[in-house]
Length: 365
Image 1 (cartoon, one colour):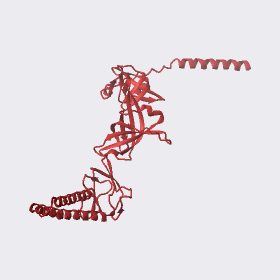
Image 2 (cartoon, helix red, strand yellow):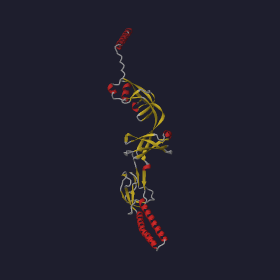
Image 3 (cartoon, helix red, strand yellow):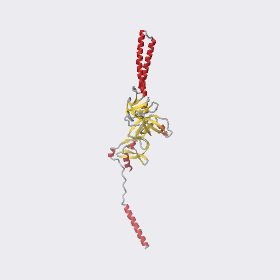
């Protein structure tokens, strides 16, 4: 019985093996997928650029802050004591040179006005005395000394009148006892420290107004100690602010302050920027890219040609007639729309500079 069951088992095993072999002989191997070729419709819309050698430019990204151009900023102080009666401008107003900003009622100004009246009266009196002395001298009733004395008194009165006029002019040019505060330059009121009925004194030390011409501003950027040698006066600087994300403001490093902050370990570099439309406002946060040429050439491609995947950079090299290959590249430096490479492609190669990620994905699959 056991022998019969063993023989039947062997037969079933042989039959199953034969059946499996016959089935496996009918399975077809899957065909390999054809290499992706860029369709003509896509070729007509993409940008293909040629790999070139470009002068290598180093770039350093800094943080900074928009600031007033302190060379075009004026703080206004009171030259007399008094009470503010009429403030005519508000913070942020644009004013023109000579425009009245405020009026101060001042006893000192009243005294200056009185001195002017006295000086004018003395002129009239001493002039008549001089004329009389000359007539008497002609008739022999006065000596030359009398004429000289009268002339001296008249000259002193003229000098006192000029002094009184100058004092009035320096203090607002008002002869009715008011101290007139005027704008010395065109610009914006960026500080205002008085209101009506404020008491002011020349020895107080606080400015009444500050006016700044914002057509030109400074950007104060921070440079860490390790990067100080990478920044030079005259280096090109591209500045961006949050309020204008698609706009780049271009200037140059104008000054490097050779004082290191002991806490933050940074020094300040100053960049001067034109600001004709007043888009840049003091205290705005700024991102700054400072660049300077290195004096040698390097392979460069458009930054849009780069594809980043799995911690590596790649480009899509176009061979022609829709054929393209993926090439890993070693990035040296990126500066705006231009990227410098150490290796990966050669001068004269053509790379896909738009829709690169789409084509890379198709080729990679």
